Length: 269
Ligand code: KIV
Image (cartoon, rainbow, N blue to C red):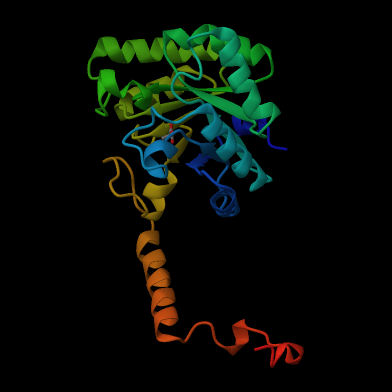
C-alpha cells in the first residue's frame, strides 16, 4: 500500500506526478500510465459534473468518487479533496468527513484548501492518522473572493504564502499544492520546507506537478492558461460514437458475430 512517506522520499530525487481522476476506469488508466498520486479533485464539479465551479460538490459525491478511484487503483496514493464547507465550520464534523474518506472509501489522504483557518485542523487530522495535503495560492473554493487570477501578486501576499506553507508543515501536512502563483515564489517555498510541493501553474521549481485529467487528455471545454493538453480524447471519443451511430443506422451493427441463435427457439410465432 502506498504511504505518504514513500511520496516524501521521492522529493528532491524524482519528480512527483499527480493527476485527477473521478472514476475507477480513468483511475486505472492514470495509474497504469505511471502517475504517483491520484487526486479525486473537487474539480469534478466543473470537470465532469456540469457545474460552473467546485462549490456545489457534496461530501456524498466526493465519497462515491473516492471509493470508485480507490477500487480502480493498487499502487497510486489516492487523495480525497475535501469539498467546500465539508471542513472548517465545526471540528468534529470536519474530522468525521475527512475520516470517512479513509475509513469507508479507501483514500490514503485528504487535501484541504488551506489558510490560517486550517492549521489546527491539519494538526488534529495528522494526529489522528489522517494525512493532510495542504493547498495554498489559488484555492478555487474561494472563487467568490479571489476569482481565478494568479495569487501572491505583491511581496506581502507572497510572504503570507511562505509563512502559511511553513506553518502547515509544522502542523503536520505531508505535502503542499501550490496553485497559480509566480514560479519564483513556488521555488522559494519549495526550498524553505521539507515536505514535497506539487505545483499547478507554479512553474518547474516544485517537487512535482498536478493537472486536471480532462485538461490533459483534451476533454475539457475550456482550460486554465497554465494547463497543457497532451491528447485529443474528445475527438477520439466523438469518432467512435459517430461510427457506432452510423453502424446501427446502416444495419452493419450488430453483425452475426455479435448475436447467437438457438434452433430450439425457432417457430415460436
Ligand atoms: O480539485 C482539483 O483538481 C485540485 C487540483 C487542481 C490541485 O485541487
